[in-house]
Every structure is written in structure tokens, then in C-alpha cells.
Image (cartoon, rainbow, N blue to C red; front, top):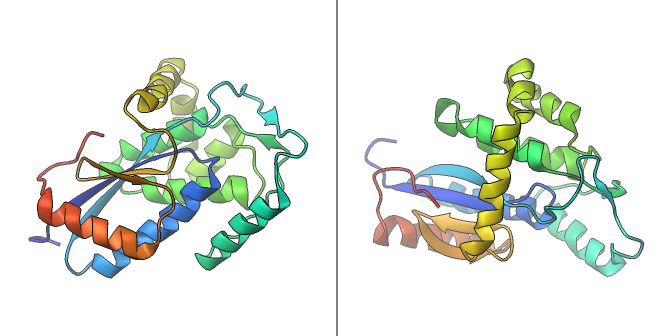
Length: 217
């Protein structure tokens, strides 16, 4: 990988957002097209779509899941290899899930963070997990982390408060919807764009905004 230009990809996301998972898959397809030219560092940043959800979750209101909208998301998921079950009857509180992502980011230069994000999306959207403390500990253990370290980290109130504050500050930085992407520290776009959009914008970031270190979006 030496000698290849670096592209830092920062993704502002919430693991209860189906389009964030779809966007992840499309990003990865774009990256795959460019692996011969560039090297990539993907980092997940916290956002809370519903910051007032209590720890036990919040029942999804009747009629919230529009059948046509669900069908659109299911089809979009299938096109990138995602199986949405939409079996949950409640919105989850995702703060502990974000804490696990932060823990993963702090280990080995974040080598496992993208895998953890994938596992969290699958746990909620495919397996119907509510991302409770036990669910998040299990995801962390399956990703190769010590379960007691995970539990200690995701229940540390100071860490949770800091993650909450960071997530809330995203709105003040102009993030109004997720997924939101920064490439090499540059604001790019939001939404699960097509693969060719990712390929083009990743290339622009590498060539016009070269970096030597991780961006701090």
C-alpha cells in the first residue's frame, strides 16, 4: 500500500438508519473499484436520529412504516446484498452502539471499526436485536473484543455523555441527514448515492485534497 495516495473517509451515521447501511455497501463498492490506485481509512462518527429515545427504546408509531417506502428500502437493500427484516417494533437507543464503534476506533488504528458497524447494522435490521447492552456486548465479542472491556466502555457514563455531545454537535456543523460523508476532511454529500458517485468523489478527494494524516471531521 506504500506510495498510494490516502483517502480518509469519515461517515456520520446512526445504526438505526437503513440508508446508512445501504450507503456503506455502495461506498465499499466504490472503494473496491479504486483499491489499485488509493488506500483508504474508513471511520464512523456518531449521529443520533432520535436523541430523546430512552434506554429501553421507543415503540414505533402505528402507520410509521409506509408499505411503499418499506418496499423501496427492501429492494435497495437486496441490490447491495442486505436483507432487511424490519421485525423490530421499537426504535432503539443507539448510544451504546456508538460507544462500541468508538472503542473499535481506538484499537489498532480502527482496523475493526468498519466490521463492527456492519455487525451492528445486521443485528438491528436483519436479526431484530434492540441493541441493548447485552446485544452490543455480544456484537463486540463476535468482532474480537474482550466482552468485559466492551461492557465497561459502553456503560461508562462520561464516555456516553461525550459521545452524545459529539453526536448532537454534528447538526451545528451542517449535518442535517445521514449518512453524511467527508473525504479527506472535505464535506462531500449525504445519502446512499450510486457507486459511480462514490468512485468519482473519492478520486477527486485523493487528487485535489491530498492528506498525510487522518481528518478530524
